[in-house]
Each structure stands twice: as C-alpha cells, then as structure tokens.
Length: 409
Image (tube, rainbow, N blue to C red; front, side):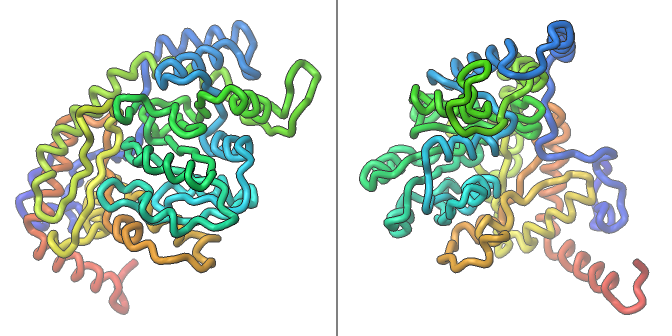
C-alpha cells in the first residue's frame, strides 16, 4: 500500500491509488478449475445441456443434503425461483416484505400483480421487524416474505407465530443465507419454502442460478412442474408453467464450487476476523457481527457509518475508497420503497430502513481478497476517519472547484 501519511496522498486528491486493480464486492469465487473442466468435457461428450441432466440432479441432491430439506428444485436464477415459489403458494392481493432488500424481492410480487407492502426493519438485525407487521395486515394480505439479510436469519419464530395467527403463508428469501443456520438448524427448511441464490456474486455460485428448497412434497411437485412449462412427462402438460430450468453448465459450476465450500467459508471468516479486529471499535462505525454459535458463510462485511460521530458521511467515505480502487457498495440504497414504481405510491414511514440505507457500506470479501488487502482497506478507512475534518474540508474545496464557472471538465 502506498504510504498515506498526508491528505494529499489520498487518490481522490491526486495520490496513487492503494490498489492498481479494482477490488470488487462480490467478485466470484471459483473452485477447482480442473474439476470444472472435467465436468465440461463430460457435458459435451454426453450432449445433455439442460432439461434435468445428471449434474443438475446431483446439484439438487447436494444442496438438499446441506440445507437438510427433502426437496431442492434448481432454477436458472433466484428471481425466477422466487416468482415460481410465490405462484406455487398461490399468493395474491398484498404480501408484506421488508423494503431493505434487493429490489427483486419486491419485483417478484409486482411482476405477478401482487402488491408488496413494505415493512420497516429491526435496527439491530436489519431484518424485517415482526413488531411492525401486525399493523400492516389487511383483509387482502396473503403472506409474509422474510429476508435473511447478511446471512443472519430473521426472527423465524415470531414470523411463524404471526403467520399462523393470521392464516398467512410464510416464505423466505434466503439469497444471502446459503450455508447458514438458525438455532442450530440449517436455513432452508423454515416457512413453507425458502429461496437460495447462486448468482455470480454469492459465495457459492453457479454462474447464474437459484433454487427453491422445501419440506412440502406437494409444493415441491408444483414448483417442479412450473419451472418446466408444466410438463409431467415427455409430451404431457398438466400445469401452467414457464422455463426456469438450470443448465448443466451452471450445475457443473455449482458442484465444483460446493467442493470448495469449506475453503470459501474459511477465507471469508478469516477476512471477517481481521475486518472486525481493525474496525469494530472505531468511533461512529457499527460493525455487523455474526453469532459464532451458528453456521455462517461470512460473506458480507457491512458497516453502519454514523456521520454525526465520524464527521464524514457514508457517501463521502465511499468516494474516497472508490478513488483507491476499493469499490465498496451501499446496499440496498435507497430502499425498495424509494424506487419505481413503489415510490409513486403512498407508503407509511420506514425510519429505520431510511436510516440504514443512508449509512450502510459493504466491503470486499471472498477468495480474491487477501488479508493484506483487508488490512490496507482498514488502514484507508482509519486514515480517512482520523483526519475526518481535514478530509472533509478538502473534499468540499475540490467539489467547489469542479463546480465553479469555467472549471475544466
């Protein structure tokens, strides 16, 4: 790392970036390339590219075993998986969801003519707040969708009690939580179904992919029919469906990465340990921590930046780090309720969602991030915060100069 001993050493003010190459959040983990190449040769030799090939079947079996569920139905992506799960559960009317989630959670409902009703989050966990749900339930409400953010499961017991009391379906978006547990039980078997993501940014990827997992035999059968045009045999259609199938190529990548799952988790966990050691005690930084008693993938390193204490806002810190080629992300800004088309609708106040969306910064993690990288990132953050007043003044002068009449573009 270039020595950052003066404000002018920061790349945003003309210094050399700390990293020559961009360091991304969610850069794909890749398992044993030789094992993947062997599987690719197998696919090409068999000429079985899709339609529930042997690799898809094996991948489904491995995921079901890991999640401790009876059924895994692999899909081309997690959004389609969520849409099919919603349709298979016959949801309609209104469904209560957190706004602090990736917009696909809301879109999967809206796409099917179902109204997402946004609920505020618990400020401690960033998951949907069960205490705020009851006041949102109407005669049109048919379900609750919880999102296991950062891999930390929702308050499942509270959500299950609410769903039972009001005769609502309960579905979980578990895109962040593959390989994680709740009260010692693996995420996957809670509610009526859960949906995993194996997108390229997830710690286990299938290039692009997702899955519905459930212990409900009848629901699993409907989901299988729906993801394959409703075919129940070679030329027998018994249900309305779509094309949600995972390809053999994706399943081969998934199997290869599952073989390295423990290695991926170990790297994530060690990076998390150093991030926590370096940043958790900084003034104005609230570090998202994990319960060491649960299984976790440790993928997400997220900080809440309290500008009133740091003197620098989340967005200003992001600008500084981007200039150093550390491409931190502000998940899930600005919240689904402030995106189209939902922003055009009357929605009640979501103060915790708004606050967290303004303050969260997610840092790089994964197999492409070394411990040296982690320490460099931490040193950059500490340097910026320790010199907050000077950095902030320099940033504002820079912006005034750029924005002044006659300034060069």
